[in-house]
Amino acid sequence: MADVTPTPRRSAARRPAPIPAQSGTSQPASTEPSAPRPPRRRLWRWLRVLAVVLFCIFLAGEAYLRWYIGLGDPPLAMADPLMHFRYVPSQTCMRLHHLIHYNAYSMRSDDFPPHKTDPAELRIIMIGDSVINGGSMLDQSALVSTLLQKSLSDELHRPVVVGNASAGGWGPPSELGWIKTFGTLDADIIVLVVSSHNYANVPQWPVPIGEEFDRPTRKPILAWEEFFRRYASRLSFSPPAEAFVDPAQPSESDINWCIWSIQQIVKIAHAGGALVIVAQHAQVQELGGNWKPGHAYNEAAARSAGADRIVQFEPTFRIARETGRDPYRLYDNIHPNKAGHDLMADELRQSIEKLLESHPR
Figure 1 (cartoon, rainbow, N blue to C red):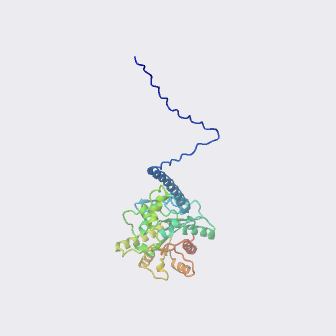
Figure 2 (tube, rainbow, N blue to C red; figure 1 turned 60 degrees about the horizontal axis):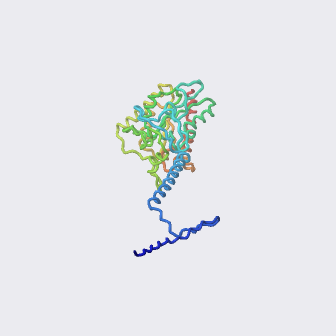
Figure 3 (cartoon, helix red, strand yellow; figure 1 turned 90 degrees about the horizontal axis):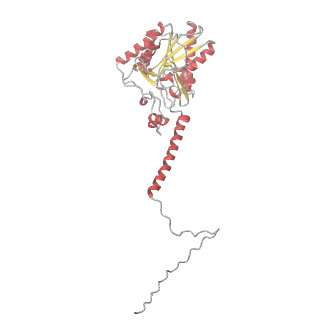
């Protein structure tokens, strides 16, 4: 039997054991390049940053428009069967940092009771359109009615209340609707302010209220909303067009409606025991006596109805303009600025004092 010698087994090669890292020593940095960030993740990261930036700009713009410019709190309007439209009664708002307050009679005036509580009180009601309303460009304290109330009270040394029943866009039919609705409110004097274009300024349908007519019926949620709805479309690098353009040749029925309305206002005022002043306002083009046709129509209507006094603002405005004190708004051929309201108040104060001399109240 042959000897079988066992084949020796190969021993596995031993790998050197790793040397443990000693305290205070650092492992060598890997020389392998890091994997690039996926493009989609980088895009989302930039979108998040952009969204935060835009949101911050939006908030800053809202704060700027609301508190620095004064948007976001316009006076609200409402439809009315007799006045066509009017401002919502008993509302107070800040518009372009100007105080605007409408009392219970939709007047841009302080609150006062429907009847006098003091027998010495002199009560005057002014009725008109945007010329005396002032709009958002004037603070309540700068209106002709407010200035007239203060000056008469100082001159006569008695309590004086002057109401301002007006709205931009009103004509004689709407103004007649106001006095039919609220009456004369114990007024001693009614002052009706008319311009040449009022001789045919009749209500138009649909009722001109809403944001597109600059007479909103609701408060905007954001100042941004009001900015884009009412102002962004008007931005221009060129001077704006004239603020008022005379209408096309009116119809005879429109003229007759307005003449009749002026006459009715005078008659209702007289029936309520009030004296009547009809004050005629002039456009820039009419200064110097270049009257438009409506001026003669309005004056004839007032005289035929028995108005107690007719006042012309034209001489005062013309002299002011000639002496460097422009009474009209910039790029505006009809609406008085703060200086214009001051001139109207002074002219009316003198006329009222002369009227009271012959007709004590």
